[in-house]
Image 1 (cartoon, helix red, strand yellow):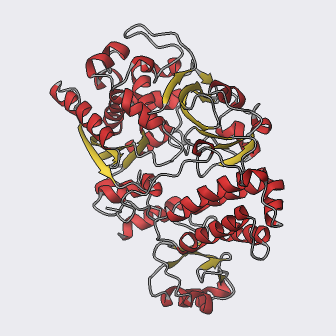
Image 2 (cartoon, rainbow over the protein chains, first blue to last red):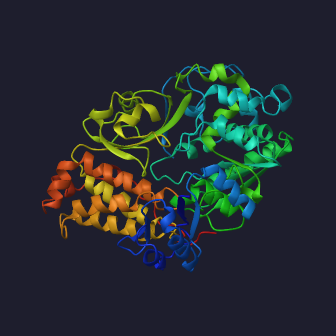
Image 3 (tube, helix red, strand yellow):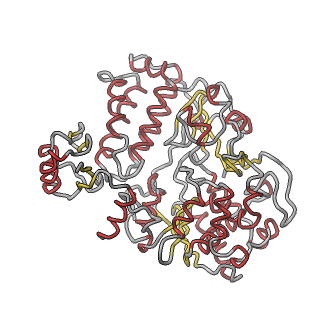
Length: 80
Length: 444
């Protein structure tokens, strides 16, 4: 299953561990903040999960790529 | 206070369906807010919820085709229906923050017709199942807070509203008027935007479904509740019905707030204020876009009409730059302001906006380091879309449009040759207004 990375830009403080662990999909801008380059194919899923777990501020999350915005919102509601 | 002018002069008789002017009836004679009595003489009483019933107003607003007048232009009926359909009691927030420095229309509206706004908020609350209306104002506008509080007291004494009206004074910041910032502040936090989802209609104030509307939008809701959607559509165009308030400032003969029919051509709107139409204009506010007036004079001032030019009406802001003024300098001023007005939450905005503001300052001074135009074009692409709110996107849009609209000036500046306008000493009214700092550190 293709996965989608979602970054919470407020939580992110630019530790940049994610860009090391998932260089195929995350690069850093000139100020050291991550830019997500695209969805995560199954082959990169393990690296993506490692990147998500490594984030010290829990700013990164992985969702199924086909999940709509509203489903994401409902999910969010259930979680909190 | 700015001068107030109207596009048509016919005066409505008490309680009749107003033709022409709607929100601005009687403004030319008023140096103070209309009292409740004057308000009822002007528009008649607000029909009780029994007549239209819960949900009836939602349908009426949808049928009227009203869109938000705060900038985003989202269909108001759709938003009301979304809040009404959620489970549990809802909340209504009237957004009167008007943090856009070149906009004065909400201040003018609240200073003349506060009861129209409060009518709309109370009616919307009943329609979506809310028992409380939070009116959010900028705490640096103490006179406005006093006037709105007085209007609320009048209504309480008259036992007018079946819902609670609470007036709040929020800190003044450009991004504090963003809807998630209002929710966060009302929930006890700082007036800074939040990551979405959830959107406020899903979970907002006190975790309840929350309807947030600009105060002008609510004033139109009050009129739709009285006179119905068919009446509302007698002004404007089928795709953009009703009237809207616009603020025209800068190089215009008569700066101020005007009520226009939605869909009026930009050139006709600018002519009302006596703008020098050989100059340039910033449309939509500090998140807006710059254009030579001649290029867009024929376009209707609607989202669809302006889309071909990459522009949007925003909150109805038109800032006119005189023909001989330097647009790069004007854009640099605005960008510097926007860079300092961020919430300091998201990296791309915290670091990206000061970076492009510095690029623009170098350009404006005609002392570029390296190749500023190439650097800016790269940075625009990197910064936009990466904040929790649209602050960085808006700033980038304004800056990028300046490089297009003032392309020849930009090239001259980039080559170290400032244009003539950059050196002309003009009165401040020729440059975009930048608010004086006011308790800038304070977010709560």
